[in-house]
View 1 (spheres, rainbow over the protein chains, first blue to last red):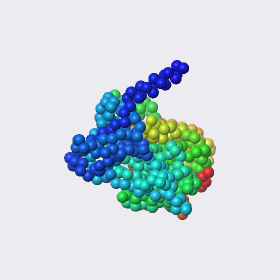
View 2 (tube, each protein chain N blue to C red; view 1 turned 90 degrees about the vertical axis):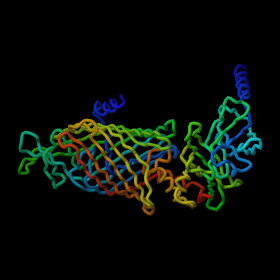
View 3 (cartoon, chains in turn brown, red; view 1 turned 180 degrees about the vertical axis):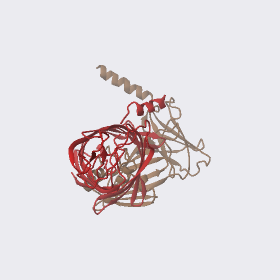
Length: 247
Length: 304
């Protein structure tokens, strides 16, 4: 009885701080003329459930709308996709304001691009593939955050508004263990705009990540990791071919 | 204060990092990437010039091999390594009384050189097989970096013959050398940049020889990210440290290492060209540099 009352109290207290209104303001020397009438907002790193908000006619460079679910503005972080640019991850400007999450971002036009991802099995069928965007925090207002998404058979096989200067994008390959570091797209598309990787080249790319210390461990040239783990993982993975394109 | 602690760490521990041989594989498997147990048998073979063993010069140039067997399970790693560098015998003159000269005739030809004086770097033991056992535990840091903490025990047996001038064998001494070491990966972030390294402590001692010595080592190795140059990768490292027992306290080891490697898909082998100048300081001779260079191949024989 006591615990039930306690849970009810917590739920009620959370509801007291919940809102679903989001307002985004873009600032910067180049204005916001290139930005569309709607922009997409990612809440708490859940890119799969990003929601659109529309331009607010009452104020310049401002968009306003509602999220899919109520959220607590004290603890929720947001980032925005602007079709050609993305923002870092922020808390609301005033976290004590419980009726609206107002966010201000610096806008740098044409700083991002889309990355096309085609993951094919041996029968050339599209495969589901997950990804993680590790967004850096460069400013005091920024929050370092992992944003997650999935490219499914029914979705557009693109990761939108990628900015390699602001984030690292990892692909979660089929067969990969959940805690393992994924394939870093930044390194694969560092010197090319179009990469076609078979199983062997994927293992190569993972090994290069190892040697650069980009798999959350010290830089090492370890053949047991390469031939004993990564190669074995790719041999058992249904993934046969991966095509990455910087668009 | 911080500086004092740093100096104290070098001086008071009089301590501690076993320098892994130039051809040591330093294998690592991130436990997050595999399930169950993994066994890997691994062979390294090659040849080198001007090599050093635990910051001590070896007698001559020559080939080497190392056979490593590793078991990885959960967050643990157990290595059994067996290797040998055919780098000749270090002949040492008996300090007193006089005439007999100590050499190890098992590996002729032998160059007889005077015993290193006090305040200089000792010579490495004569060429003989070396056995190593390593046990490591991997732990993830709060930032998500997987760091390895590893204990190492190395043992090497070698014979030393005491020979009278004229070639008469007086006695054969059965000596051995042991090294106990601990090394720990380190990681911190400078802005967006990951700074990886390892801190190593070791104590090396030998007995059963006419020149019994012990040395303690402490070193920090900075592990830089590899640089890709097409098919060849360059892995740079930089080690600084202090080694006791050579008449120079504090920082007396500086050891960069450049490892050019090429992975050959047909043979599934890694080919390495390693250049590693080892600068050491002793009380008697000051700084001296030994230009280690080695060419080696590295291949996993079995992985299950």
